[in-house]
Length: 244
Image (tube, rainbow, N blue to C red; front, side):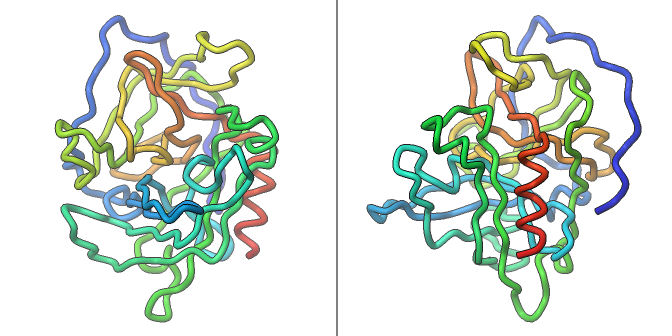
């Protein structure tokens, strides 16, 4: 894991005009480390989410949303979980990596889906003898990081305007605290990616396609999308995943 970035000056509050996600055309590390997720629930239904490769000891970990790994109502983990880095219009340039372990926060299940705990890590099997990060690279990841900064989010939203889940989309903005839900510790931006983007990365200190993961796309309200903060509990899960 690379050293964490130093403190950054807080950004200003939310803008008065929401922005819309746009197709990511900037290339760089995010174009290989962001990817699409498919999985099945207990009834056999197939669903899609997003995830991002995080630097880890075993070079095999992705960050995603808790609701992309487990049914919060039953505590049953999803199955046949796969990650496709660099997915684009049906193309799988780096192959399909299958998960060997899913790590979600127990508080996400015990609270029946409180979004404060809506983060998870998946550990991917090797493909053609190589780990995921050896194949596509990895983003940095930061815990207990400063909030209120300028951040970027990436995901595979399913709306027609976002390419029907077939391309990587991008939002950016100055993050602000979620004031709409009592007890929320989430932060958000004035931009909304739709279903399928869940689990996609929020990155700070982003430059040239690389940065530090500080959360994942979780929920939206109005014109805003929010990410849970990655604190000590998330750090513990990350370490477990990195040792698996």
